[in-house]
Length: 265
Image 1 (cartoon, rainbow, N blue to C red):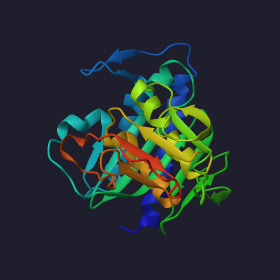
Image 2 (image 1 turned 180 degrees about the horizontal axis):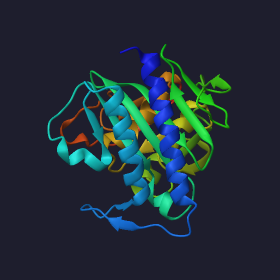
Image 3 (image 1 turned 60 degrees about the vertical axis):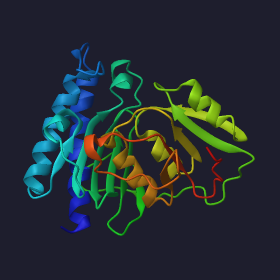
């Protein structure tokens, strides 16, 4: 399957899902339930999941599909597959803070090759290109791509003054302790996979995550960051983060611009 065709369809579905999410987000009220792991799920999660799943299965019927809302049906490990978080940052959505995204990624041999990250409330759309790069598209967004510009990480960030991005909803003492081992110029917080994209655009240099995440949380943002010249490694041994693991759970990780000198754990 040509990468250009795949990214075009992934972009289209992310935008459609974003429209549906915003329709529910802008309503006076919406239903929120707790899943078996106590995390929240809304009608927006389910509507976006159904829309994206139907579109991907129709366009790419031979490629396995994993989504957050349907992950229980995939007990085995995979190597090459599509993976989706239809609404990443549900807590941000419920609290109407805007930092939520639609994530769609294509993983090949354990490596996220293609990814789309759309933040509909922020009006920001990031995706990989067929030739391995990454772009941000400027809105308003239509059926055909509008103005796009290539994005790239800070090529030589100064370790004496790093810009660090951390989670809004999952910040903890362990993360703060790790960040304090660097000379930090400033910090910002963001929800969902937007943190990867801030590193990808050079708006941040370092994003450490010392907490539980799943592959659908990270694959699309990881793909965009890699396309922009960044890296995502395991926290424990600094080896590359891989995908298709049994259960789809990630270890702790660090996303960063390659010029950052990672401290040893």
